Image 1 (cartoon, rainbow, N blue to C red):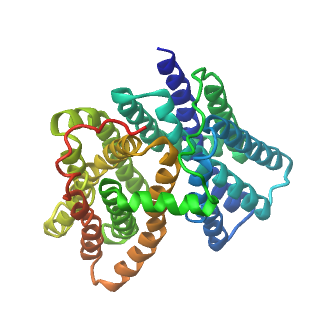
Image 2 (cartoon, rainbow, N blue to C red):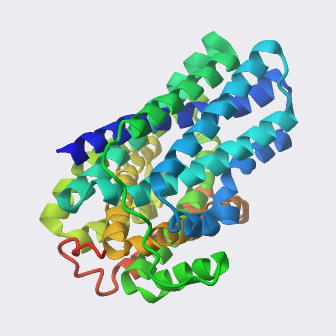
Length: 407
């Protein structure tokens, strides 16, 4: 019972901070553009500062987290984020904002968020076990989907009526809520499991990479996610061009279409537990390949009802990412001993997230290379559908139940 109460504390804090993340994703570039008159290149650099943390530091962070208790890391990461957004709030209020300040603080927030995300994913098995662990990951994915649905609109209202100082201040308070949630946890955390005498940090990084690559299920999941991210981020780049230029939609209509996708994601979260119970782990993961595969039908929009086709495809495609996230995180937690969990999570996320900027760039190139954006959209989606080649492999394909967790 105590463990479940502790999880609810962690869940509450994380849910509020996820909403804060969505506000900050809008507040930082808004401050750069509206307050400082930043160029498009400067805004792009600001967004990149926070997104390069996984490719640069992810593997090292995972190795560090396997050497220490994770709960103190959660506390320190929240304190850093509170401090950064507190400085931004004060600076915006008194007129001290500058692009160098935004770059530095966005980088610090990115690093703190990297450690927080990895720490809570590796800390969760200390609080929950068995079916409770799977349900916990589903609830966290629900919070993530709700934040993505409501965060941009909440952030827009805060920035429009309160200004960037209010937006930054609300974000600082969201991390205070996360800090309180972590502070209320009472379940003792086990000491780190060393397992073997370590020669150094880089040896730990290499051992984590080797563990993922040699494990047939973890390797398949990692390669599948990398292909999915590559194709779907190329898809999103082309989709924006298609909606504006191919279908001549307004910005408001495009925003409404993406809201349909967010609703689909919520439906996917709600269905995750039922799908795993009815179909098993392997078949459920095979179904998540529909995220990219359904877009292979987009050329049919050339024959009429293009907007209706896009709405339907976006809804069906959006169902599957939260199902994938909740199921795969739980599966990694079950298949990985505690001594390797930080490195395995970091290795998978570093590889998976590194294909996102590549996919976004490739999508633009493909859109320019094909005579119609509809064909380009189908080509990018085919890359995402290649993830199914990994999900069809044994023993993953035939996996019915979650395996007994490795200690």
